[in-house]
Image 1 (spheres, one colour):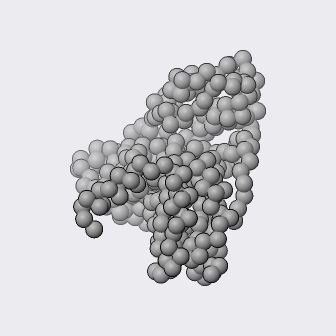
Image 2 (tube, one colour):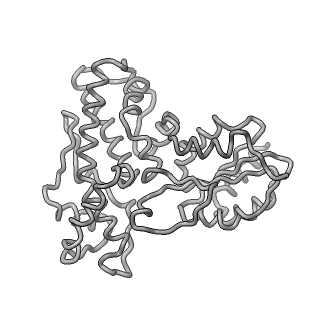
Image 3 (cartoon, one colour):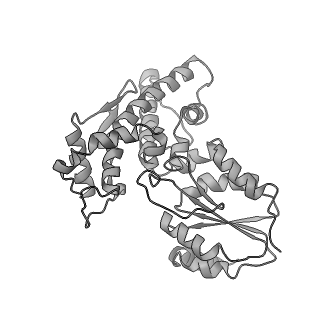
Length: 322
């Protein structure tokens, strides 16, 4: 392939609308065995793509599609799933979010995988992955008293963080249910920077920077350009908190927020190690908010629900209509 041809393909891939996937898949090669996988975002490829490539038969190609958001994934499913495509398989992957709690109804299908937790990031944030970072990226010994103590320290900090997040997620649930009946309000959570509200100190402990719940809500409103009416919110906050504490925290805490905490903890850990040993750690990759899923996603153990989903579709390898 010439450089010009490659550059044209790259340009087309970055500009063609997601809806064009419909027309593309209608013209797939019937003699080519292909697994078509539809994801919400770009980082999903690092998580799901790695696992699928590991499991799939070598005779099948994997083609992936970034749809941009959950609504677009379901749109593609609606348009494509009923079509009979010879030697083709269509799989769809979405995050659960808190749509089961709001509740918000979505169509069910056995070829749509929905995460058990809020999102794929929640699968990554755990002490097993932390120990891998400690051993593989920080180049420290694992399986000994020190790494065990580190995992204990992390789990305590994560537990404290989750307690803090109950009020944040209650506020999100409050607005997702639109309990103040504000028809013009939108909730852009990508604008939220929770690290301004807490810190991980030199003892690797979680500490909230804002001492009062109202201060947290005011900061969330400020960051999202939202407006919470406290005379309504105050009547719901305890009820919402009591509702959310009944769930596994990973099912209710936004994965992006939990990953932000994890990256912050890893960064703080590195500073503590370098200060204590008076030596700079030589790492092969710098873990940050932008690359954390790409670096850590392939290291995650296969979640049981995802294993069952892929076993159903990929093992035995693809019994298709011909």
